[in-house]
Length: 183
Ligand code: TYR
Image (cartoon, rainbow, N blue to C red; front, top):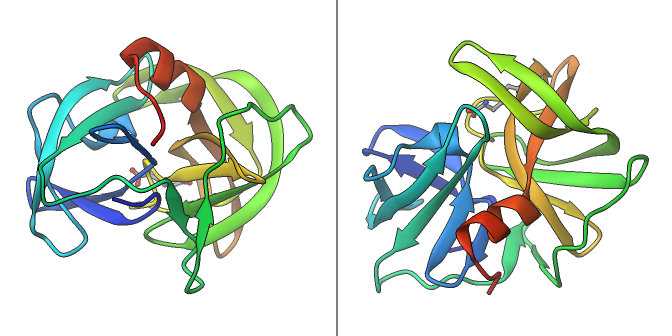
């Protein structure tokens, strides 16, 4: 289990892993409901959503089976990995990068915190706004500022051809609410 790698929900829709935690990983809530089965990048059985909040929030927790080992790294899609050293929140104005299974690593700046976004399924509050692009399948993926984990991709507008605005769910809330620890 590695941040930003693809995983599949009910063998169909693709999302991205956010961050490894003890016992599994965190991702976006809109990627799966509690009880949904996941398969890994190789489509092998991987785990189950044990928690999910969307709309309202946009976080989910997947518990993995013994064939999968949560590792404290994020795929940079450049043949390497970034090691996650902690989860200290970066301020507005900070440089930030996102990794996801559709568009790889993309970077920009933190523009605002506590943003409210209205999706077709409902309203999500408490998101962080950035000028980083994303595309379908990047959802749930990892946001890092330096070596510090920041959050998981929720949604936004635009794409990585024209550029975009993307919101992420802050990680600290996911870890606190679910009493999780980064590996
Ligand atoms: N919400 C998308 C997903 O589920 C990810 C996404 C993010 C798509 C930002 C577009 C966008 O502009 O994969």
